[in-house]
Image 1 (tube, one colour):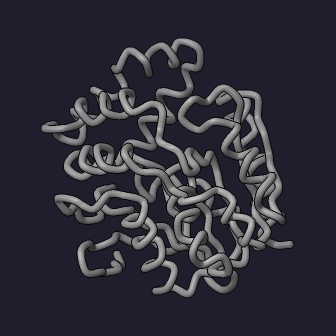
Image 2: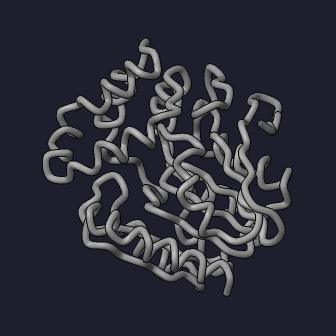
Length: 259
């Protein structure tokens, strides 16, 4: 597999498709580039998926897991492949935001799925720190099983049994060394200096959110959609509604990127 090597990390890359546009796809915290694989068949052109530092198959430095670091990973991959479109989920959306607050014209189009933060401290540190504790010191398989057995997740699986298989798929390439390091640093940071700087970003932007998600509050998407001059907001009632509507989301993403 191809790699992008920077001054402090080796980033694992997977490329699908060919031609224009070239899109960089950035995954969420704890996951890997595999998370974005479901999107690539519906995205036109060349799709460049990568694992952030400490995630998936990328290297895991001892430190360096704040939004400037993740944004540097994103920038390095986007530059290496000439990407002019950026698609990001959660952590990936935050890294995109951190990058474009200083380079508002870096991308021609943006897709932000479940953005989690703005310019204030994260509210749910305990939840993520518990995940870090469950992962640390275990093999990948042991860590995945520990996460799936966490009582908070298990309660969700009772309401939505399909979610267990979905989570297992997302965690299949879990990096048990790097992810605890990443969690313990990034929870003390936030993506943006000042949310109002996002008004400088004129690229057409599709923001996708759901109600009732405490880690990815709908309010974050609503604020970004109000501030960014060419933003469109899609809202789903809850996680199950979003899951049932995957075909709608992917269809809209494709239409958006082709327009």
